[in-house]
Length: 383
Image 1 (spheres, rainbow, N blue to C red):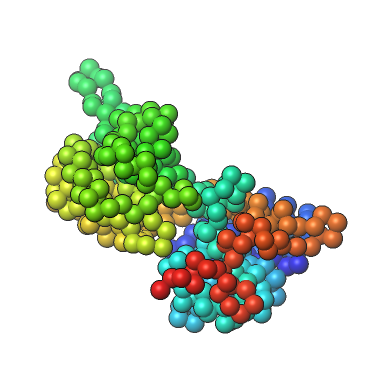
Image 2 (cartoon, rainbow, N blue to C red):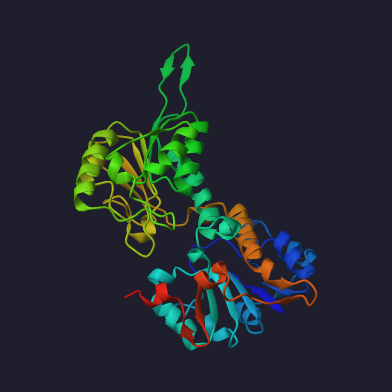
């Protein structure tokens, strides 16, 4: 079977859905791997490195996709509504693995179905133990959390750690992390390593122990309500209006004394919850920073401007939507390994053929289109 990895054609995407290590593993399994020329350039993976790993190099996107049985992408295929129509370059029944954003791009999924493509949304991977190594959201969010702290530090007008000098003492930065998922936990760990005083908040009470294990202090709003705030899939639930009001009061009081606020709260398929109001931003000291990791879904901060650093009367609001793409080598390597871990259990070692178990939870949950239809119940239900 032929695996193809095209260059990412969406504006601003620096990652590639393969690494030399993963190419080498797939070729060893008997797959023929083709990589578009220049696809890995931003990640430090030259055409020559991919060739040494066993890949063939194609000259353009069309020649990369046209004969592919399996297509690896970071972001979903572009359609006729985009600058480049990647769907038209794919053969019927080709299999596509990507971060599909399927819950907010149903029209694109309908186009994939019309083209009879079999598509897997790697961002719909179930939160089960054996799927952790396949979870692109986790691998990329980990890097986002780290990079959010770096962005915050570079925009902040003071140092992070306490410094005792002959000229006086520099106080440590106060960092507040909102949302304790993978990104939030990495942000806590990174900020602590850099010497900041870290507090964190999440509606899920179960995250309190995780925060404290990393040296942070957990901000409590309503302990009883927070015990019921987690879905069976491990995500945060939408909270009641009464809780949200109390949440706003507690955060408002806490946030005015913080130097850097990092927000990471997302609800799959829905606009990001507004956690930081304009009033809260106005209460922060001049020189403070808000880094909003939910910018792509509308932002957790009312003043966030997507892909901008907005100065709100002396408080900087950082709203970049692809922080993993600022670390393209690591992000690409991890994403590619996620895809390898997803497919390799389904490769028959005797025939070197892919034999998917369509009832496997990781396959069934991520499958969006097949046989000319949208088959994912969760995507069907999107309005």
